[in-house]
Amino acid sequence: MTLNDFSLNRRTVVVGAGVLAAAATLTACGSGDDTESAAAASPDPGAPAGALTKAADVPVGGGVIVGDTVVTQPTAGTFVGLSSTCTHAGCKVATVARGTINCPCHGSRFELDGAVRGGPATAPLSAKPVRVEGDSIVPA
Image 1 (tube, helix red, strand yellow):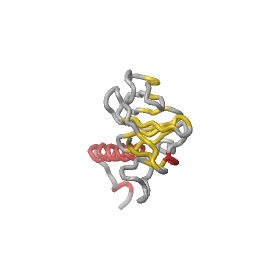
Image 2 (cartoon, one colour; image 1 turned 180 degrees about the horizontal axis):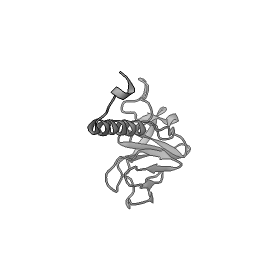
Image 3 (cartoon, helix red, strand yellow; image 1 turned 135 degrees about the horizontal axis):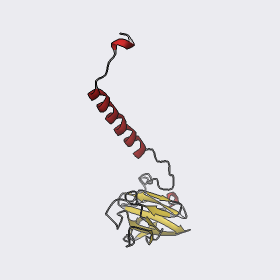
Image 4 (cartoon, helix red, strand yellow; image 1 turned 180 degrees about the vertical axis):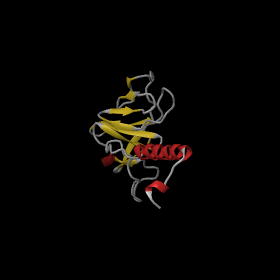
């Protein structure tokens, strides 16, 4: 088969472009390299039951998202638990970076204590009390 024997119809080109666009979108969704917001790995088998993450995995001035909970450490040794559901439209926040918790849907940003830093959200993230048990963060 030569290049002259190869032909594409309009439908093949449109379908192919759609498949490429979908693949690019999926790749972009999973390619984040924001180490501050990476969800902590499952606690080790010796961790307390229900542990959310290791205290050492929550950076000072940052946080991690673990399921439906955001665990932040605004100052050394102070841990805050918050809902990961944005109060604007119910989307799940996606990152904790540069000192804010960030929602990808409409750009709302929250302080590490859950207060609104930038809208459209007008209400803070709901508190989810946490405590330190051993070297882990657990629901209080």
